[in-house]
Length: 519
Image (tube, rainbow, N blue to C red; front, side, top):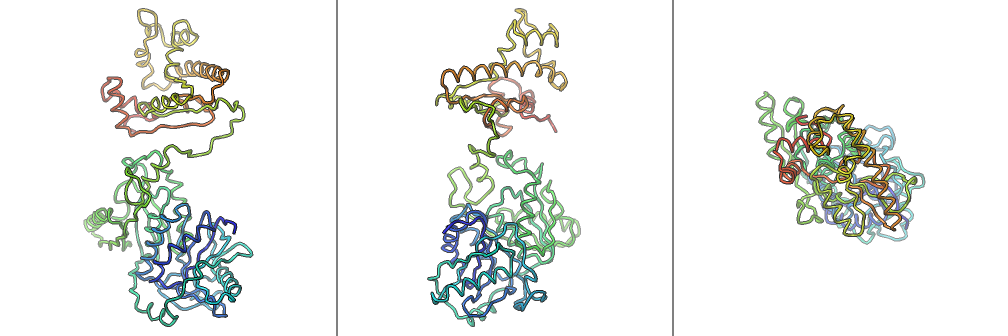
């Protein structure tokens, strides 16, 4: 069967048996769906009775919370490529079935629109009689269309028809009566970075939505709260993280009032909002939740209920990564990959293929370029070319003296680059005057070396340039590689390499990364 971009999985097994069945069901679903898989829960749904079933409200119980955690954990192990979303529109402390559109007790008065329109519907419903296959798939199609806006002629697929129900429907109802209810709250709050939503994020968000009846407040880390994050340079922009959060939450529980605020300190509005009742934490953030409560009490507000969820283990982690599913590990796996496809460079000859290698001072550009050179690439070191353009008698040499004066010369008439540096340091206008002279000359030398490499039949050139982006040299390369390193490590390397004091090297590091010290 062909693959579908988006599917919806209708789970009908009893809640207490689903955790054991979910792995094979997800494995089968991953053979048919390649991007987004929505999960709709209706324990006890009978698609083979001959009558058309209607969606019902299912109560928020502890077993449901456990299932959500297991589902996202299994999905991370089995089908990590899928964007799994557990839908909660029909989860509420009310179990009356709806008899038609417009009835107040119906979870779906009108079909709910999802961010991605389902192209196939799957179910774990156990087919007792193969002769009923057509009847069951048609019933499933109509049921799903009553709940969600779907593609016309939605295909229906039965998964694991060999699974048999272990309980009669009457037994299921009795079991549900005994299920432990989950305490819910009017207003719930969480905080986090939410970089590249993964299974652990979704578990936190889903359970928070399960607990919240009216409002869900989310603090999203920004600026100051990102400084100590691993590979913070690869964290998605705040606006993109918020956009993806809103889309996810609109899908899973559109009835909730969702408020997303910037989090620039560990507490945010959680310590001043009087309406909040519950904060959702993990094992490792529980102390943060306790600190929030301490602040609230100091502010004369009641403490929040701390609802703790378990961390999800990462079955695919390496020795250098955390054991739990984390954005830090995901960012580390992005290293050495293309973050965006290269732009069209049809104006460049296909060979040699030119890589623009850039990054701050001390970030390891030379080490990478050296390795590529050992593999046969031509290493074009723009720092060395920068020295060449200052050589006595060159066009840049005369223009620099004319612009900055003869007091930048050594006794032998060569340019004293330290003296020149003192004239431009901290003065953007003078620095621009210098780069307007030097950068075009370096670009000419780069193009000349690339032309020579082409004549020699070389396949790859590496343009090693800290100022590749600032100088506008991306038009000379097919793709750009960026090296990144923590600022503290860069300063340490520069201090040791150049034997400069820590303060001077910090300023140098800031210039190389395009920042201004203390800003």
